[in-house]
Length: 159
Image 1 (cartoon, rainbow, N blue to C red):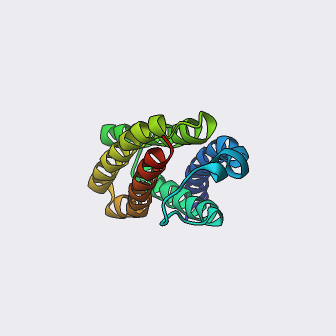
Image 2: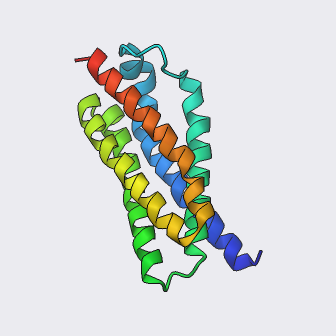
Image 3: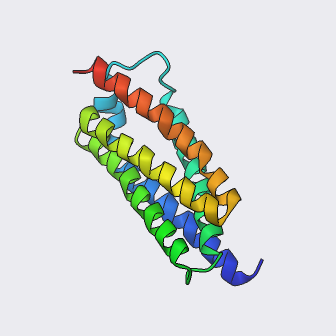
């Protein structure tokens, strides 16, 4: 792998990890206070599980974006795909702000549906450019699908 490609891969992963850091700014302070006081469904994962899952998912997202970016940024479809990818990254961070920052499971639920749709669109676009890039995003879509259900139950249990 050429040094240019290593830098592109590293940059793509770092951008995705920064999204996680931004989200954690809103998340971390609310875990021991507001979030711990919420009624949660029995299938809620333990708090310690979320960080390693998200670190893994952000890494997969970065690799996926790199695989698309590496096909050539001159291509219009690649530019569109990466733009939609960037939008879903912003939506990802916005969910943390709405849920943990504003303490609003309702707004977060509405937003996570939009996020899920954005991820699905990104997968469809990425699959047309690089099959591995699309497949690398499937764990992310599955985790966000689970998060949709969890968010819904938290919203219903905490009117």
